[in-house]
Length: 257
Image: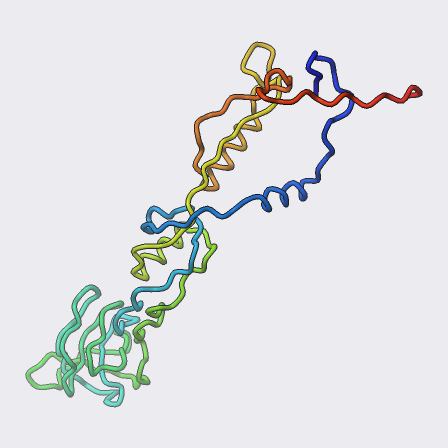
């Protein structure tokens, strides 16, 4: 509702109606990107990347077993082999594989040098045919590379993992951690002030709560904005708007109306 300075009702709006799409275009045209800053991945949650991010490590960083089983040389299989030792996920890589031997290995553990495949436990059986050593019968003849993840098979060093303009969320944070990224460039969080207009919204008996303001504040907060101090409600009366110019007089009404 629009009022004259004396409180009388304006029959027509002083301002032309603007389509929502046009209003959005006006705001976007007037907006400028905020300055980028460099920060840690943890502090970038909810912010937009200002430049692409590349991986700082290979993932996996070593040849890793896909299954629990025995690392061996494919050209020697099937065969009964002495068990040289064992390696589990989290262990350092062991020495090179000796001829006539295999290594018990768990999922995710580094494959020893000299081994080019892993035979699943299900394709093996206990065997005592190798004198003086624990041994196992590996029953299959896999190809080289079978059940082995190569270095960088998930992520390569220097590979672009996130593009500029992407918003950093929980999944992106996990990817940054996996790729060994310790710093990212993001646009600063916008600082926004929100106020309502309407003489009927003042906090006093007979007025209405400012529900739209509460909704707008929640939308801005959930989209990553930093909200400033609460701003007061601006009424409709020109006298309540410091520095405002007097309103233009209303248009004459059609006498036949």
